[in-house]
Structure formats: structure tokens, C-alpha cells
Image 1 (cartoon, rainbow, N blue to C red):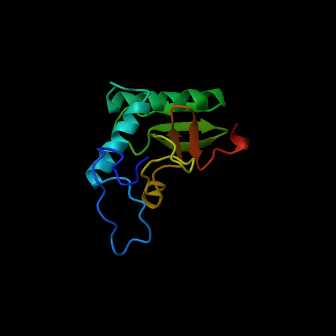
Image 2 (image 1 turned 135 degrees about the vertical axis):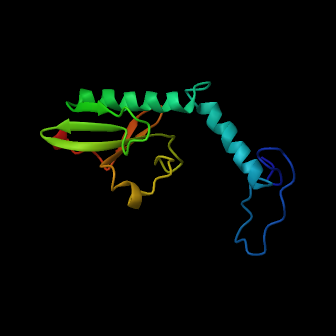
Amino acid sequence: MNNNKCLNCGGELPPPSKHSRNDARKYCSWECRDAYYKKKYHLFNPYKGTSSGTTGAISELRVAVDLLSKGFNVFRSLSPNSPCDLAVLKNGRLRRIEVRTTFLGTSGKPNSAVNKKDDLSNIDHYAFVTPEKIIYEPEIKGEDR
């Protein structure tokens, strides 16, 4: 790989900033960086050609099936403006679930914008749905299974 070329367009990289500690630039501009990641996302997107609403519905249904198989009673919201996507009940305990369709980042954690300080007042768990698995945060504990 030529370290002087943009990964997206192959153009010359700008010189490093005088405030930069190292010259680890990979893109000639923020636009090229965004375009590169957009192409990369679409390359691995299992729902190509599907609207974002349908993709979200697929993820909600995947979470519903997963929780049903773990013995939860699952209720799905009828309104797209509800404070949570699913409500689940088990052993007399009701929980609110927010479903997010995402991919895992290089750290192995979901790439999803979540402001936990605000959102946790309306929900009890996030369900991050990737093409391979579902990750619950906070984790749904074993006594609920």
C-alpha cells in the first residue's frame, strides 16, 4: 500500500498538520473518508435494496424470536414513535427493549450512537442486532432465562 495515496480516491494525501503526532492519514478529505466507509458498509450489508424501515422491522423480529425462545412474553410496539420497540415480560418483570441494527467495530463492540444518559430513562435494555448475532446491553441475566 502506498502511504501517500488516499484509500478512497487514490489522490495525494495532504501534508501532516504541525499539531499531528504522527502521519497516520488514510484519506485526502473527510468526504473521501465518509465515502470509503459508506462503500465498505454497503459491501457487507445483508439487507441491500431494503428500506431502513424494513431493515429495522427485521431486526425487531429477530430480537422477538430470540427472546421468545428464552421464555419471554414479547409485545411489539404498534407506533414508530413509541419510547421503546419491544416490551418483554417474564416472571412478573416487565422490561423495555430498544432495538438497534448495527455492525461490530474493530473493538468488537456495536457501532451505534447511543446516549445512555438520556435513553436509559425510557428503556431497560438495548438489543444491538448485527448480521451474525444479537448483543444485549445491559446483558439480560441468567435468572431471566
